Image 1: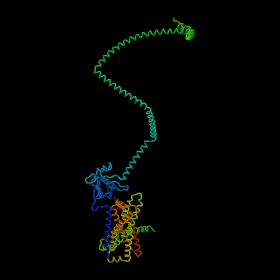
Image 2 (image 1 turned 45 degrees about the horizontal axis):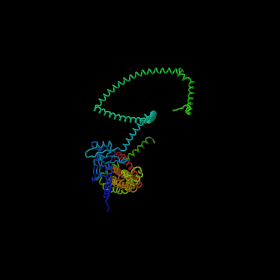
Image 3 (image 1 turned 90 degrees about the horizontal axis):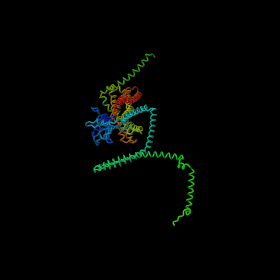
Image 4 (image 1 turned 45 degrees about the vertical axis):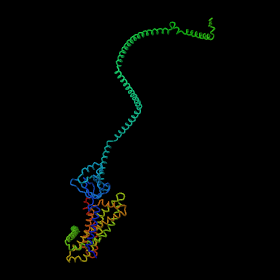
Length: 333
Length: 263
């Protein structure tokens, strides 16, 4: 049976339409049966996030961005369509961020505690807390980061330029001179320290000795104090004072005795002076060869005579020793 | 040649161009007016839809199949080492849906449908069948032009939609079979930047192509003069003008619609 053109055309149109609509729904990941769970996140700005971008939980794709709409209060509401089995973390937040360098964005659902410690993110999250909606924050995209990096590079270049202006050739010479002076100062200081190290050791040793002496003195003082205490308690102090009075009296007597002795010594000195003067005059006469002693000392003939006499005496003594009977004839009976 | 004659030549040329534009405008207006005569064009519409649309499905799908395969391979060749290969899916989907399926299918149908219409109506014109229709009280626009134009507007998007599905599917299969791209990667690439606008844009564009191709074919066919040579010239002119019209309309939609679209 030959089919009518209307049927064929209608069938073609319907089949193509069904296939096309199914393909579109499949590519859009639509959910006509509403079996997926839906959550709404609130943002101040969604960056380059688009409908169809992935929603990720702990790195696993769990759904997609179903819709983006402006809210009345200046916020942006992002509708997320999540797979039925996907479990949201406790106290969830949504972070919109780039998932690749090719402009692809994703919505990352995470715990609030796992948020990056970024002041901007925390501020956005705090500003987007609304009843029924998950608070969200948007990370800057590569373009913004590049712009900021460019700005930083510009600032660095400006600072470098200023440093270049301030740090001219004379500044470099001065800095070099300062470094050189500092090096000399350092070496001198090191040498001084080395030289004085032994002195310091000595001083330290002496100081230790002094400390030891002080300790000993302190111990002695303690003993003395103890003795004083005991003296105070046993009445010996009075006896000591009385002994001291007696000693002072004896000292005074001794002083007067010494005074008298001093006077006598002065007289003795006078006499000694006159004796020395007389001695000087006698010696002067002797040196002048005057008198018997002067002649004896100054006349060599007497010395020669005496010397020959001594020689004769030695000979006589030797002869006596050798033959004593010649000179001594001792008879008792 | 004096100055007055030169001015007359310029005036005549200008008038000729304006008359041609006026003829085209009158032709379009007569076609639109014929929409009221449902009794005349109603029985013919389905027949023309089958001839222009259903019978053109194989050629449209065939072109799209090979276009999808080649496009996937070209995308892979371009992206290797620099761009992730799942963008092959993105490129295939965007290019097939928004550009290649409508334009290539439109060009193919311009040759098949445009030439067919021009030859058919041209033959009717030179054999005075159209004059006979007018004598019998039939409006040739309602009986011949409007059903074809309607079939073009309705069935071109159908053929293009089938070409879209076939092209993307062929690219998908080629990516899996011939390239180092997995099916999930290709699907990820498709879904990454897919918008319903892509399909709408392609279908609306193809509908405008269908209208242009059928109207040009009808115009050339109804304007045929002489014998077989006139019919052949009309068919050739229909194909050439249709191809040019498709490319012009393609640019028109890109400027008017695509340029102002914010994803």
